[in-house]
Image (cartoon, rainbow, N blue to C red; front, side, top):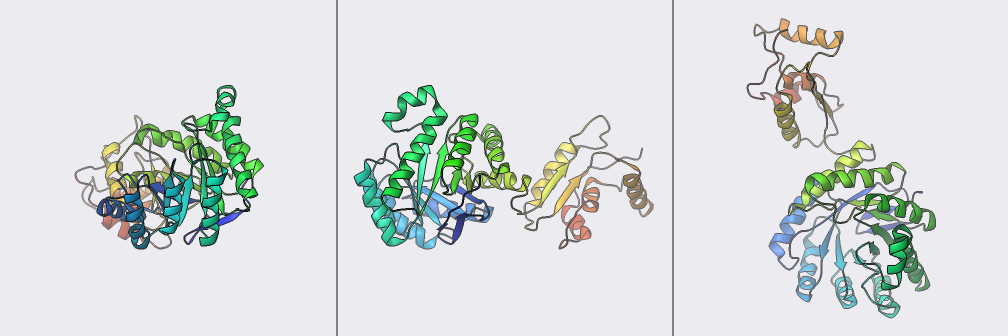
Length: 356
């Protein structure tokens, strides 16, 4: 079920009916300020609503102060093992701090973090990960990994509530897609707090994108999930953002930029579809409006045939019915004129329809 509570990370509402937020994580050493800020600006331009940075050392905290001040989007500090770094990250102005229940320490340490977070009005994230569950859940994990994940999250939620702290979101992540789906479904029935979704250590841009689309798409289609992060083995964090947006666009949850529809190709194909679609997709990256563009590999019906005849009637060149012109004719937008789209996409060099 959808989350009932809402928190705010910086100016971004999370949960309680707010749009699903896109998050990513920088791939740089946080203390490398120029590299980190460059990546943050690139992911923001790609459409990230939130960005997380690793804070494993004191020098990262020093950089965090500047990052928070200069970042165009809210910054989340990712903390493992050392609760004092969480305190320092809060003091540095992080818009949110992620804690891992499996390694952050006992209740007395968590109490210090929640006390400062309450004072500052800063939200936290309870980040449960299948690779670092609390030791007392290891046996349960072997018997029932889904229940172990959910138990870890619920136990920490109950600790937060005992500490009178409710300004948080929760995540359960696993490399196992079915376990991620099942555990988040169970958790959504047990707690009212916002949920952050992800498949941890998903893999390469190819395999990781597919795993994430299956796992996160399944949950989002059920109305579960308030923020998402695609975890890919790439140094280019903006690639994670692009995949996240494609998932949201496919489910009609949010709109940003064009949607490209393309023929899957078959024996009726009339031109080099593969390279043309790749070129059209590349050129559409500069568009911000949520237009739809389809590239057809052949004439589908009489209506398409009539369009082709009209174009050919206006041109002496029998090869004038180009793929980009077909794309332009199929453009659907209240803001974009098909003629303009045709001008932007044309020419896709040397690739033409042939007269049949």
